[in-house]
Structure formats: structure tokens, C-alpha cells
Image: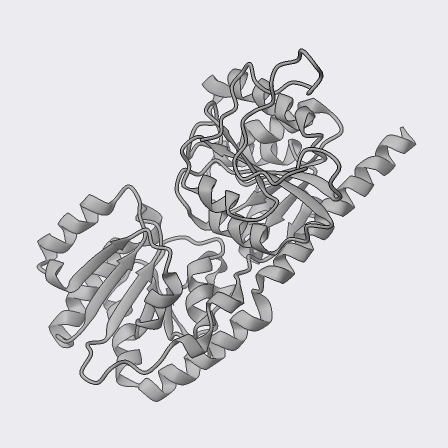
Amino acid sequence: MAALTPGGGGSGRPGADPPPDRVGESAGAVAGEPGLRVLQIVSDSNIGGAGRLLLNFLAAYDRSRLQVYVLCPAGSLLQERCAANPGVTVLALPELPPDQSFAPARLWKQIPAIIRTLRQYDIKVVHTHASFAGRLAAKLSGGTCVIYTRHRLDGPAAGGRSRLLSLVDSCTCDRVVAVSQAVREDLIRQGVEDRKIALIYNGIDLSKFQPQLTGEPPAGQKPVIGLVGRLEPEKGHRCFLEAARILLQQHGDCRFQIVGGGSLEQELRDFACGLGIAGQVEFLGLREDIPGLLAQMSVVALPSLTEAMPLSLVEAMSMGKPCVASNVGGVKEILVDRENGLLVEPDNPGVLAASIAWLLEHQEQARRMGGAAARTAAERFDARVMTEQLTRLYLECVREKAKRQYQQ
């Protein structure tokens, strides 16, 4: 795969260090093409919310206005997925530690390599989805606009360290993108100036998540209750499995599907065995065919303990699925209780089970909520709208920086 090394990069002059290897670069991507040069930096090894947002952006952006590069850790699952988009150049950086936004011991290696990359490709905007090293390198390089998307919630109880890191984040970027109003309020609570925050909701490719893809289940098929999300503690899979046990005691004809990968897979499999429900729960792993899987689900659950802006919920809603979701973070900005889904108290298996059962038992109301959910997704969470808002933010930041430099 492509790699950047501390000795790589360079200016491209004869005799200079060779440029970094590249994945998925179309001819002419380095010079002579139109558009503002934007480097997206993502530190995820897996494909979570940040990665999916990036993939939706790469599929939708205007190639005549932007020239987009992606920098990610070597071996990230995002490498090939990003490179599959026409015109996108993907660069892998071995020094970029996977799944770590802030790794002080490795900054001395990361920053020089990133700065060389910025200069090699004449990057004008750096957009990071976590990487502190990326923001710091862009600031140190001079003349580069820096944008940071906050994909997480810290909450009112966040400690001093979290508030300090938020202020550091703010100082190392020109603008902060909040993916929900809940995130925006979180940032302000932690001391980030409101004028620096841009509220831009995540968007999905609506063409892939259409209600008409969902047909009537075959006669006699057991209802399928699904959960799509990374297998990590904050996603609430234990609550889902406990709710599954309750449902199976009351509605023995249900099946349960868990879609996604993560660090808790074996632990959750063992937990399902301990509950005596392993035979009724399928762990499907990381899948590409999410629309097809959602189409077969009767109800979709989101039992998260915290959520900034859940794309998996929007995807299920877009397909007209009746959804039950924890009333946390940005969820209530998407789902209105008993209008386009059901909101439940987080980490309460009994309440989650009862809400799922209600939807199974009241199919007409469930269909009505699913239809309202599809309309909400179509009206508010289109990836094309998100991409246009981000593009305008990039251009605005470049103009503002040029104006400040002119006035100095």
C-alpha cells in the first residue's frame, strides 16, 4: 500500500526526495488540475462515523471545485474504499498511529512528514477528523486553512483534561465543524468560541437507502431486529442483547442481527452465550451490503449510551424502517418520539424490549413512523447538501485567511 516515510515527500525538484507513494491517484492529480487542494486526515483504522462521512463526501464532491487528497494510517480499512472514488489521491502514513487523535510520543515523527506532504501537494485546506498532529502540522506549515470536525460528545460531566484538549483543538484550527446541535453546545460549554463553530449535519447517499428497497417479508418469516454499529462500549450492545433475551421470552419467534466490527466482538459473543440466546443472534461483522441487510429488518435499534450524530440511524430511517433509539446526544435532533420513531431511556433493556415489542405488535403505527422517518432523512440528511456546505466552508476559510494576510 501507499506509504509516507519521514524521509519521503520533498519539493518535486530534480534531486529532491521522491514524493510519497500514492493510491488511487488519477493522471494529473498533482499538477495542472482545477480546484482548491484539500487534504482530509482521518486516523481511524476501522470504518466508523468519521470514515463513513468521509466516504459520502468523496462520492459527492464537485471535482471542478476541489482537488481532494486523503491521509490515513497505513493499513486502514479506509485506504481502498477512499481510493475507489475517481480523482481522489490516498496517502498512507505509517507514523500516524491508528485510532489515536493525540499521541505525544510520536508527534516528532508525524509532524515533519505531514508538513512535507502539505508542501509537496500545495495543500490549501486541511480537514481533520481527529488527528491533532494533522492540525498542528498545518498550523506550523503556515498559510494553510485548518478545519476540524468533532464527531464525539464529551457531555456536561467532562473533566478538566477534556476541556483543556477542546481548547487546544480550537487553537489549532480556523473552524470547528459540529455534526449536531448537541456537539455544538458541547463545544461551547468547553470554551470554544461560537463564531468558530459551523453546524453541518452528516449526510448519506440517499440513492442507496430507498424505502422501495424494503418489501414485505415472506410469509412465516420471523421478525428480524437489527443493530448496525461498531462493537465498542458506547454503542450499547450489551443492553441490546439483554433486551433480546427479554423479547425471546415474550416473542419466541424473533431473530437478531448485529452488523459491525470492533474490539468487543468475542466478549459480546460470550455474553450472548451466557444469556442463552447465541442461537438467535447473528454477528454479521463489517459488511458492505448495509441497504440489503436493512431491507430485511423489521425493527432497527440504536441502544447507544452516547451519540453525536448516528449515521446508522439516518440510513435505517431513510429506508422507512421503524426505529427505537436511545434519547442521547444528537439523536433527538433526528428522531421525534412517536412521530418518526421511538425514543427510549439509555441502558434500560426492559424499556428497549418493550418498545421493540410495541412496534412488532402495532404494525400500522410502525409503518406510519417508518414513512415519516424516510421523509425526515430525505429532507435533512442528504450527503449532497452536507458536501456543498463543507465546500463553501473551505472556500470561505481560504478567503478569510487571504483577507487577514492582506491586512497585516
